[in-house]
Image (cartoon, rainbow, N blue to C red):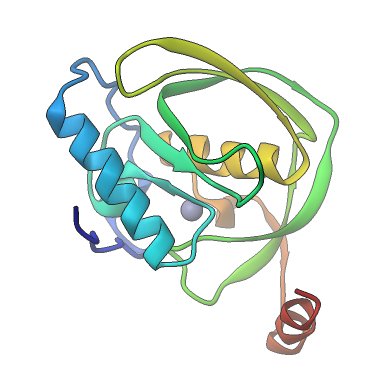
Length: 162
Ligand SMILES: [Zn+2]
């Protein structure tokens, strides 16, 4: 396993619609393992394949709760309800945080690394993370949804709360 290099904005690969995965092979497993290592190394709660330069519909999310790591292959939001507004950042935009409105609840269909379909329902921060990563697979970046950016002193206050 290895740590992959994070692609930071601007980069063409971050704004492209990614290709669906059709082969659930060892290369996919290796990519997922390396993306996991990279997400942990970079202290992220999610990572999408285009962020490591691979334009495939692959993402992982782990917000550090009891759900554990969610591997999403070819994910689609199939239902969403309500709204939530909160701070959001992205490993491809180091140091940048903004307020983003998202759905409060999402139902997502996806496949696991073996190609087996599953459905996951999430609310709150997990729902936010899922929406952020699925957006990446469509070339949509959180900055296109930010209502306002946080100043450095506001960020320090938020970090102090952790
Ligand atoms: Zn991101």
